[in-house]
Image (cartoon, rainbow, N blue to C red; front, side, top):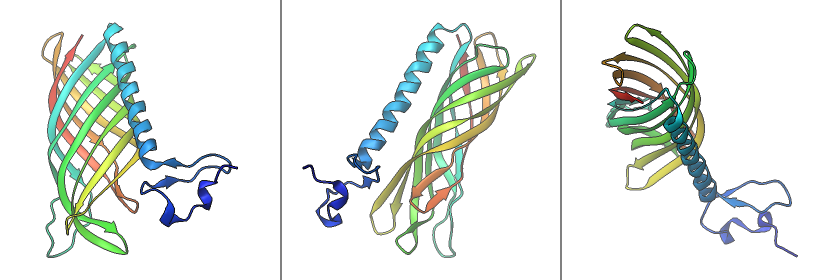
Length: 220
């Protein structure tokens, strides 16, 4: 009869982390789950891109700026919660005057602080990246448009630990944000946004991530 993965000792299992599954079903390696999540995110992007190509009111854009990661810090250790080199790319469809859907890919650049590892906190350099799909509510005043976003994202947090080792964690998380844009003409607009992007770096370290960006969008 087939061997139950739960009966295999931890020492004899493959190096990949295993995910608990209901009795009678085969265990699934964590890398396979992460690959599936990334694939779903890319499929969502592709579907929205196809919809944007067909929609009469759609847009794409790029934002550059600075992030902040709410990391723990200790006296005498390097600490810089500001994420340099942060950016995002986005596209959206607005089928009605006040409602729409948007997708976003982002990166929060390197910050320094402490993360939980083993039985204590260790110094680390952190960064994160992810994909998100959100619902958008908007209101317009002449050339100005205000937007509020709420949805779900798939985030990967990475930490380079003091001593040379590296850890990372991927997970689903709620995301949201606010933004304002100013139309330069019928196609181009200046944008300014704040996005809340919570990130987990280890199994017991989760930080509130914020991305503040300015950029440019193009409306089809």
